[in-house]
Image: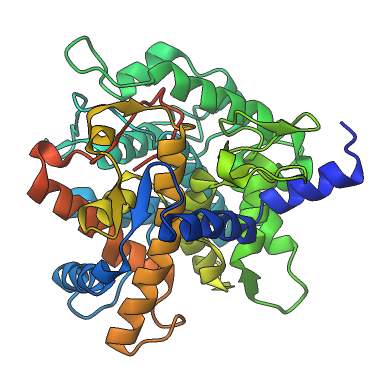
Length: 417
């Protein structure tokens, strides 16, 4: 489809991390001035919040040797040596093929990482351990991937290819997630449709995913080939751009410009203006989480990923819950906590927007207290150390089963952990 210049610039802008921060910052400023409908900000709690996250980080990583916040951490659930066993199984392949395999696994697993509902669990046959929510989804997906569920080639299970994804059956996915009447998983059909659309989407971008044996993992080859000869650094925003170009229209999206799906972008009336797209608030949380999850395989290729903090914090229910539970963000009406909301509701858009900026402020406060630079302690490590774990910890302290303070309805396509 042909976009005019105004439409093209609007779409291009809304797909950048700069747009995420700028739009969220506008709503944050309104919240600081008590001009939003549902929330206000209390920065007097910032010091307490930063200390809480630092203490949580020290409990997990006493030496502050913090890995990236990514899907790979979920694969390590229960401190099981899954990834060591996985790496051992891949030693027969070239370094670039190993990267493609890991891209395939990460991309499929991230795509399936939407809210599970409170009643689902996964019992891992290999360890007999039970996992729930994001960790359960990741472990289940890891096991399905190793079994070749996403591959159309029975002789090569270590991939997720076009045919394997587009022809995946609901009963196969249900069995992999151990879904039953007594073990329901929210949005199973929505997850299947995402994977099927992924299979179709990778055929539309041969430059990114190849023209033969199309698979999401071929993005690793594209990123490697796009570097200038001899250069070993890749910009984090460039990875996000490739992710949004290749997968952006496949992600769930309610809004479009010139027929182009904007991806994870929502509206807020407070931002309405005269320019095209003024009212839109992009989050691209799934795409950013995926980008974070591709960093380690790229590093294993010998590349250096730079400008990590161009990406934003992830405004899911753990980080957003942390901001509410620590008092940084305050609801104007307690009735907010008694209802369920759709992802596009202004309650949720406000909550998430202000959370993005508060995560930046928590990060800055932590670095000041620890006398560390953004290079030494990038946001992606603070999220891991960090805010996500602190959000889960305080939720467990305050509410049964550690449920989030605000409840978002999910159809299995909205990533919100």
